[in-house]
Length: 491
Image 1: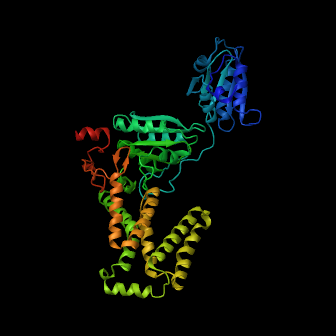
Image 2: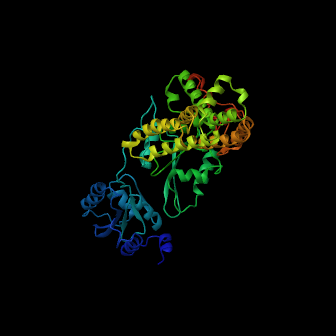
Image 3: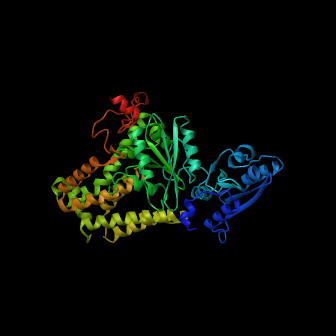
């Protein structure tokens, strides 16, 4: 029988036929991990199918093999999958399944299948026990105060972490398998009655509509379901913190988790969500507001400072104080490159050092920073290749970019900065203003699951006072404008 037809078929009532079919599909002749353990219970032959290393041997021994041996002399005939799960096996999570493809998908994830002679169904048992990383501190979203736990690569662990922070019976987790060749299991998490049903339906529909052969975690899922795949800025919030994901769920957003992805995706979001951090919720409202203003300033400096520098020094020198203009001219007297080439060289060098420090082994990563910041920078100034003031400009720009909590959003701002630099070099301040106008129009046209990216400011909507600024907690009584309760409150 061809493989496609074999996958779409159902189990027969003949145990040997079922075992032979599964052996062929699992390539048991060469695949050393595929295990078939024969058993006998009340005179009826059984066979346990599992993948070694993915299934926990201790669970199989204690709750399957031992349970069957203890009841070997007990009459449980007629024996089928339902009777086996009800009267014999001692595992809490189990289900009956007759489709061959579904059985193989479950077995590949670490579950075990018990085949019964004379029964056209298999008992699927929760025996997953593969090695997994323990819950530790976050690596990219560090906070000074607040929870210190981070997501891991195990979907079940991540779902448990989320439920710990949202201990509500309203929390719903829908598991969806995506990928036509190699499946990836995605969990759709939301609060029933809080999340807008239309948004939940849109996410569910988009995830189920993915027809890619393989989906490499949430990064691929995000690209396949977002509203504007050509946009530079992300339309979903990526976080590795369970407390932040829980906050999104309680605000009425939908959170996506996936196997082998140590972070979560939250949607819909706005531009202002990208500037929030977990510290804001744990600090006093004055501190949270101050830190958000710092991040907004860092974002604006990161995008516009190099473009403004090149526009002012090349086209609008009359706008600079005479003393500052003299200092710039004196610093650049021996530099052989135009300002545009100088900025591009420094931008490329800065992010080359940043990328190299990220990819290099941790033991020598700090040494690379010293070499890049001190030796190369000082040598470039001494050789009159780069002016000292430009190093200050690039350093401040880099610090502004690092103030952004979201990594993907920061990379998008880098590309926006290059666009502003090109416009400033071509048209001066007029070019910078034109670039700002184009980016603002693009942001106004972006949407996240149908929610405008600049809402609730543009378009203006009634909203909870925790968007741009962080006002006192006792004032934050209005639900988020995109949640089900927020829409009812507006009406």
